[in-house]
View 1: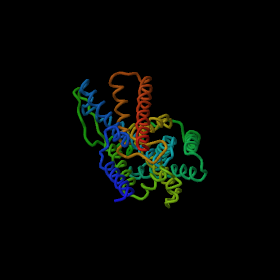
View 2: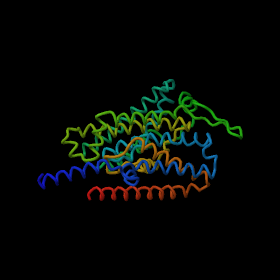
View 3: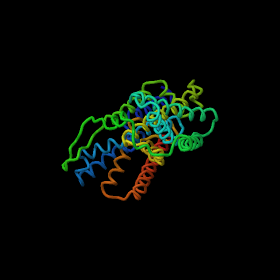
View 4: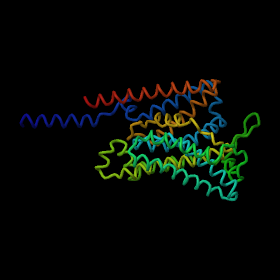
Length: 354
């Protein structure tokens, strides 16, 4: 046997050994950052439950479940855009414009409109507004952040200048009934009744739909390919225009749905609602493992990030931290988590190059 054939055999053996080598815990966490958030979520829940068993009471769990619905719908849309390499800060403006205009339309023009039709119109309205974002991002070749900052001001300005600024305290009866429809009730020790509404199922249903899109369709592969390297994705034949239109329209549709759920749950329409919640939603998606630069992330990670943010906010309320300090604590928490993810990812890349 010659020396070159011996070298080739050694190289092949080394590659096979590397392939057989099981990744360590640190490497697993670097490759699957959502597992870090999941472990952190479990650790927080166990610790707080030991200190205060009321944390895991049905009442507390139902409150957190209801609080996660609107944030979760927003986060699934943001995840789709981040995976494609973009970013969106206009989704709350889309939700506000859709929910307030539609509520006013039902009150003034079509009071007998069925609730199913209201939900469909909300999704279609949000989808059209989101498609405007996608069309502008692809057509103008401008950074998505710049475009969505502009449309955020545009949509909110249209709402306040041409639609209305007055709180709508009396909703149509079908919207009130949708917000109050109970899946089951829990009676607390002091006699109060806590309800898990049917609209809670909207979040898991949207998560399932998003999972199917990203894991079972060609569009899902096109989105990840575009976020990973748009030039390579274009050479592979993925239509960039369709990808941009789809992800922004998808996020807009979910924002429209979130807006109408928000109105029904709170039983009032406030045109100033949802302002300033964008960063918290984006943070939840990043904590779930999605990169701002695109090409990565998962639905499971996004749901985990949403639950983590919801639980942390709930725990801060439970231990009596003032609301003015809650943003400080959540911000510091997000910075530490992001620094951890970046550090682990760099170490993994350095190890791979060696």
